Length: 450
Image (cartoon, rainbow, N blue to C red; front, side, top):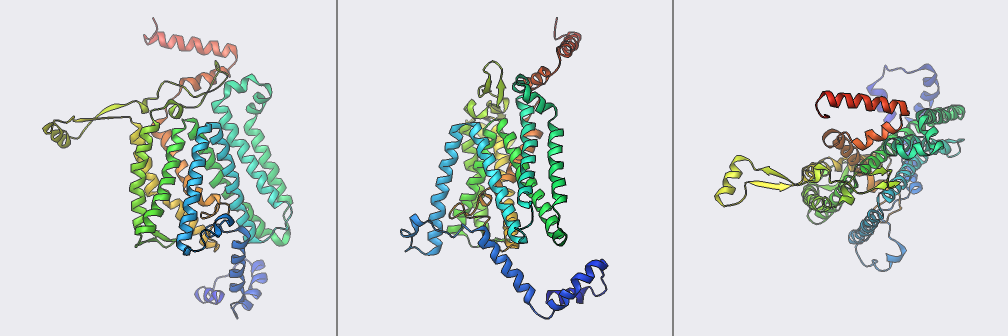
């Protein structure tokens, strides 16, 4: 029926002759019945079975206990239990330190990539094609080698220079990364099978989009951690708070539908979750900003021969006086209150992040909902009962990570003498002496040195 409607609207359109000769006869047969449409629907339903759906699943341990509850409340309880499990797990990982955060970020990245790629395999039904699953993981390996190698160069150049084999890898890092990708590219071309060209190129594109969404964003998360764990903890916590509070407000007060892509989302949940996110995010930021463990950038210390978590408190975490606007200042003076407020600039940054996570962050979830609805699946997987797959919980986090990284680069980050010194260490001794002479002469000419 869909093919008949297409011909009615575009009766004079002609495609490539080779394609017409192969496709049109089958289309003429399809026009006589709804068979192909039913077949597509059946295939998409099978995708859900292949991928697994976790939102409505009940763990065996809780099945008997919650059997008497209505489905809505059963899902609410299961979702609540595993939300707290994830929150405590997140807190424990933070306690373990930045290395644990980076490792869990990498693990989440791999699982998210796996969930997206598995949907592609299920949709195109080409499990028998040679090497394609291996190729997808090869491209993931290449991407991670490139991005994490860049981090090693940027933050641990002094350590790298102490180890000969690392120095070689760093010197030729980008060329090695490119050659690894070329191996995968040639491998893909050699694996092409004539009758599966379209499907293979579709999955090739699918793989690269998955890499763009998952690997690039996880790399930015790692970059945020290097700027100080607070730049990771606060944004991630804001997305968690927004997700939980929007669900709670929507569950108890939701009446007005928000968006068709996600029918269960309501304006009450969206606005209530947004307000709670900004408020609770500011309170959390105020507490974490007091501790150098969370605020100090991660840098390699040559004296400690390891990563240093101690530093002079960065300027954005030092309390400052802010004058109130004229009318408010006048009112404060009338009541004997101070016309100024004292707080750290980071609270302003936290307020901006809170607004983004509340207003724009949910659209990452809406995007994922549209993606899932396109393939008639409810979840990306069934790893977390009541929630779905890992990607179901991190769809908004990736968007938030990109914003925070761009925000830091634009409004917060400034040249670091320590990082500049690390680059100087990579120069040859005569180049270091030349740089010293130039710098000394410039400082003397400007009157900084006597």
